[in-house]
Image (cartoon, rainbow, N blue to C red; front, side, top):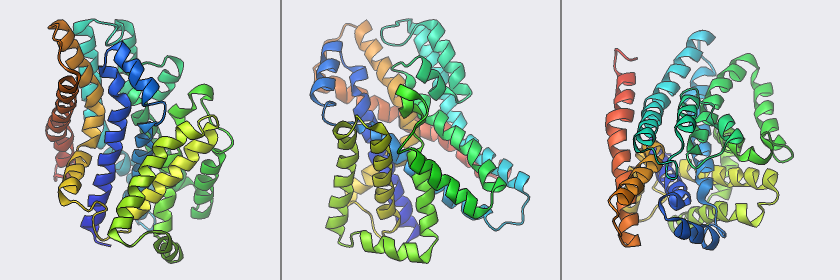
Length: 360
């Protein structure tokens, strides 16, 4: 497997994941009647929020590849390895997360329109919960339309706990724990009605996928269940993406089952991506576009909702009556531009600093 092609395919999947998430959040920029229509006529049949589960599967796999693999047989001390890992992960997460948490707070306080943003006290509470990565807990108590930081919080908590388990347990008990936690999700989930704020399935399945790729027998099995023809690969990926969007609607009354199944399908999509020598997209232009979006996906995820709300605020203040297609194009292009600027001047700067001799 070519490393560059594997990286390209991972970015393509990130591109798909962020597009699904944005598709789910479109009602936030619509007027109330249009938002209601969107939810009742479109989101009634699909649930693209499962793009987050695909993000989680990717993160779990890369956690195994970039951390577990490098620390499995190392002579460096456990403490040094753990601190090095935490530094890399949180240097990757924190600059952008903190920047957009602050930007959202300031914009909400500046415009002071609770119908678009939130009241001042709620904005301040959510800001500090974002800084401490406990938004999933806070949102389970007081859910709002600005709750999308829940996934960052869950991922940060996963990053915090995984090295502790990895270095505390022997390898067999560790993998039994990971497998057991995934299976437990089919029968019980924390969070009661807000269980989805604690859905760790994708992260666990990503870890298990990495483990599978390290075993020759499992790699041979994986090759048997992965299509070889490039057109069949494309169709399989697209059908799998459609399936994870439809499953929550089809079996949403049994969330303990559907979330685990969605994670398994995301793991399968990820398996196809990492076992391919070529791009999983046939069109080079489409592949390049998705790869470009995927490269910026973290910054787009952080920025798209506050940017959309800002566009909505400005349009309302100016009393502009834009045609819906023009309005949507304006909002979507603004979020992509903000994501690119955030990637280039916030996220990318922190990554380069991390890789420099001073930041190493």
